Length: 150
Image 1 (cartoon, one colour):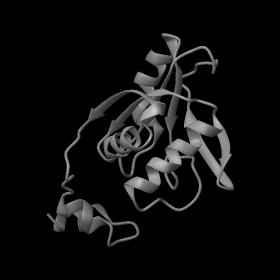
Image 2 (image 1 turned 90 degrees about the horizontal axis):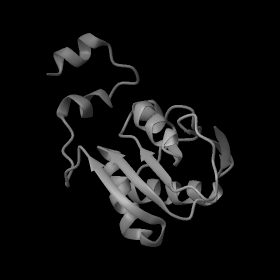
Image 3 (image 1 turned 180 degrees about the vertical axis):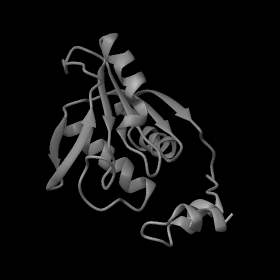
Image 4 (image 1 turned 180 degrees about the horizontal axis):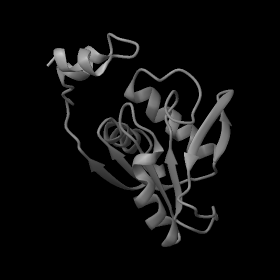
């Protein structure tokens, strides 16, 4: 599904479900460099159980346009804006890796909009391997460059 947010297209998967105001909602937030597709099976499961599903693509990821946001607070605010645009007032929020930090921040800053919270692959501070950080130095690193950086 696509929606305009902050003047650009934001994309989210619905797990093949239909949005209905009387259904509870669950929001899935992916980790860095990923997109909504990491949530395909859980999204389908919850949609079949009658939940509104929002498996979002953060800005600059997957089908969402715009530059990638540079802080957890900014991503949390973006999630809040997306849910507002979808008229979802409260949701279970599920995050993986960096998405778990966004979910945790969202729950702390928007408690009235958070029904429950599930965090996967979470730590704080979240360590990022040198290999991944080194990859950021290249626009498109070759597998050899990544291997040599180990």
